[in-house]
Length: 224
Image (cartoon, rainbow, N blue to C red; front, top):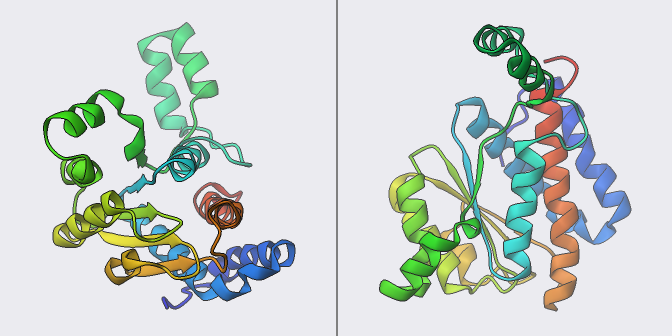
């Protein structure tokens, strides 16, 4: 597990304890949630990005995560004064509105969201390789791939994890109790302690909400 680097990280990590108070079963995941936060923090600090994929309900979770990190979750994220000034210099009216409304983001690409590309790859090449293809195109060494699979055995997620490892991209697996075969390709596995699909999904949400909350506080809290 990554070592906490400063008191600010320790304060932010306290959100995990608060999440566990609401969802006691997640106590088994505490160390892995902390490790996932530290990896994602380092990734965004070094101007890299997060790529996320899943199937069915986990596809919806992938887009949900992007929605929480690409715009405000709880905190306002105003653009810098310098960028606001540039917008206003280009167009005083539109620029002011953009400066007032744009929010700083942590870069997340949900691989499930590109219908034309994915359906073309399904049809023309290989349905089980579609996320690997996207990851190969969008990903760069230093990024992180978050693969969400309740069973841990989704072939398209495992293939993407294999591609990620070959590219120097770290892999976080968000799974059910067993971790499945995906766990064997992951740097960090958060395997929530349930075996029924809908119960696994019910615990996935507080896990990723907690991670998003911690990351937002780290990068967009009042001290920043």
